[in-house]
Image (cartoon, rainbow, N blue to C red; front, top):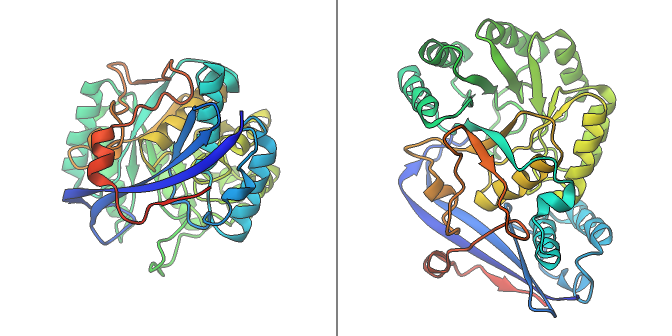
Length: 375
């Protein structure tokens, strides 16, 4: 089997009403998705998604004529492209989808096949009032979820803490609660100060009183030493790493014991090939691996296959914050949006590859002009 062509297409679904992401002051009026198609001489096509593939144009020839099963070599090429130009890891996802289809096995089986399902935590994206967040938390309980994540981003952290207090009062011990401090990285225009170690420690102490499961991204993503110090002091688990681009970051974080929970996303950092190695390394040293998944449904699926195959963490992130962020919006290019079952589990598709079923009607309706074909 040889790769004959790499096709990249982009799609955008209008959002009405807009999505007001906690990390972005500008309301999101559309949701963009990039799909990578890897075609072969045997008529099998792999599909990947999760990032924009900026920087890939002109590098298609490095993959044409290669077998998708040369995954280590192809991963090294993508790592080189990442260093020079940008994140193109959805191509790695497409290669694994292709290998799974060629082998007639789900990707999770190729990776180790540890389990067929994993508990999801409902990961929120909006800043809403304490009362509204508590009501949404109660709805998660009724849907069967066992955990949720509350996102901080008020100007005064005391207002964020009030949201967690309201949720805990509403649901009692029916949900594990994660908190995302959103201090790890910034949007391009954001010049506000981030927390220091002492601020993060004070927040962690407050969250301990509310029995919070972990505190995520409490310090800048590059502050490996600070995170290690915080982890030693903090009474709750410290999570992070969702936007650290290079696998070397995770090697250094693990060396310094910076985190209790490592969150590399296969769509953003290293693809399935390198994230599997990161997960194995940090878990060997006693930490958890629970990937970030905030891209789209295909990105969630790719991370689900990896987590179900090798993760020791009890939970996987599911971007879900109805009524504004729903499966229909997140997974608009797919026929069957990914949903947790009535007990809160995400199930690994049993179809070959990632188990993606694209919605051809949606692809036709939402394709935008910036698409290009390589080869």
